[in-house]
Image (spheres, rainbow, N blue to C red):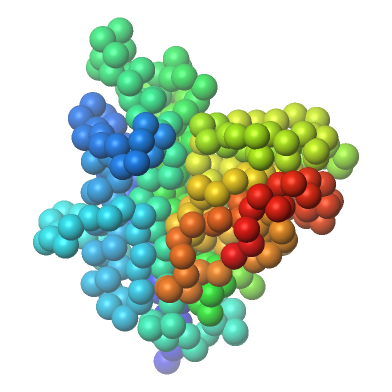
Length: 331
């Protein structure tokens, strides 16, 4: 009789199903036009009803199926009962059929830490909503072609899985993928990956040799960020929202490096994207070249910034100005 799937593969399969449901919640909240926005620390740090519902859904669903797994979510929410319609108990059957890499085959629930960003790109999500539900656009569908700068592409749901402090698996859902194709298009897609197994749900591509295209923050830039980017002598700079979205740009060949030489990014922003990037041979470090740790007891802030590449990581590290390195304390 075939043995049951390893705990890691069952957790990834559940995370995939939960992320798919999360994407539906994110779309439904936007369609309702009632975002329930609150400011956490300022205008660039927002929380919406979608953030709250998705985090409750993901954490409660995974906790019910994997009670010994440590789950850390971005939002500081009160302890309360979770509605049954937010619980997702399904698992992706394709993932369950994959063989777990040997080094992770015997892991136990209590050895795993899950980092959850229920809505990465919240600022872009709210800006898109303001246009969509301005009186001129009221009742227009979410794929309307005049959505500003394709902000809905920036929105992702992130579920990262760590073992021994290392990001080993990740799931990224893009709730609005395909929205620009118009009415009738199937919205949303889910990417996932496991170290030693690979990454799935997208077509891996690279920027042509010799081209340096940097993707960076859209709304959290400062002198450290701009000085670092300038020192890397890019041919082009893309400013977009969401850490998950930036890693997708790397693995789909739209950018060659993700550069954010500043504190601000958190562990729940990078755990899932890092796992997927590493699963295809890329690298994510701080600006000193040090790996981030994802143990349950680490501080949440990525204080020394983020540098991610699909290749040529050392080149980008070598170009970081000394003044920037001195300004960013290494964890």
